[in-house]
Figure 1 (cartoon, helix red, strand yellow):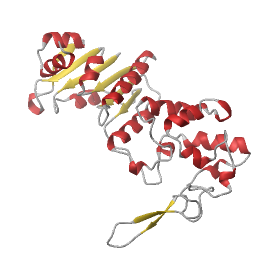
Figure 2 (cartoon, rainbow, N blue to C red; figure 1 turned 60 degrees about the vertical axis):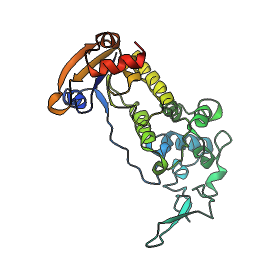
Figure 3 (cartoon, helix red, strand yellow; figure 1 turned 30 degrees about the vertical axis):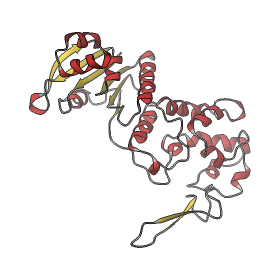
Figure 4 (spheres, rainbow, N blue to C red; figure 1 turned 180 degrees about the vertical axis):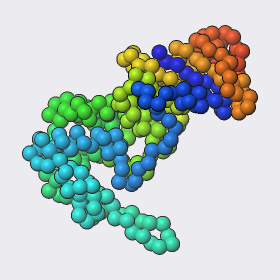
Length: 279
């Protein structure tokens, strides 16, 4: 089932759930920590999606997978696979200009002669997640390992992201969702998510709820620490901590269904959730 831990900020939600997980437990824990990535990192490299894509290109063309990495043998020699030339102007900001040799495509011209499903590797990396999901889902380019990752990225509302878009151009919320989509692939019977709606648009919260439902339907237990009322209302079971924060927190002030919490209105969470659902 979907269990949501609620309560005012500082009431002890994260401390309770993370302090209750025994060492070595079969738990996938997804926290609020940001993801790190250089300007050479992108959604394709971060999620591990580039590996099956490179192998698919190599198999289709009878060449080495290393040719289809801009960090390896296939990289443009002029810009070292960055697609841009960085010029350090000393006291001024570093200026980036498109590489004149590869025209920003990041690969040697000879590599772009190899195709998969009628596209070269630079064209694939220029695709959005939504385009790539369709491309790798069927036909000559069908690549199940890449497609599975693309489905998860779409599930968390990142269908518009480019596969080769530098991680440095992503917002905090986009990075969180990228991390969420990546870790959803890990094997575990229990998933613990710490405020997964951080930085999400309302429409993306709906997609996230659908993703959580699919995890539950597949037999997983999902525990979410959350402030968002839409997630609270969607829960099978709520554990509310409080009544306040810090020294005034740390106690379970309610445990039950969202409907019971709304009916009781005995806690701050219950009062706000009642207003949210119009009860």
